[in-house]
Length: 98
Image (cartoon, rainbow, N blue to C red):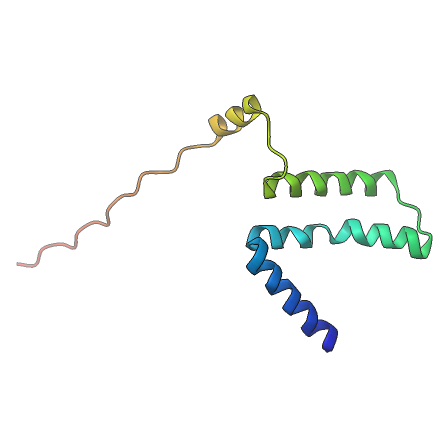
């Protein structure tokens, strides 16, 4: 119980100091750390698929937190392929009663 309470306190301090998106990125890194500790402590052998998965997780985390940015040309292509949001329409007026 004490460890869980301490983890919550640390996590909420992380949210307060680093922001919600960066704090959320911490949870994405759990599979990589689990693989690392399994290799160090339990002598498990990482497979190629596990290493590729960790690389994808690290790349996605770096892109989502802004640590890594797409080149300008690729960013322009992504923005061009994203559909524009639909314009907001007003709700129809109720029918007039006579």
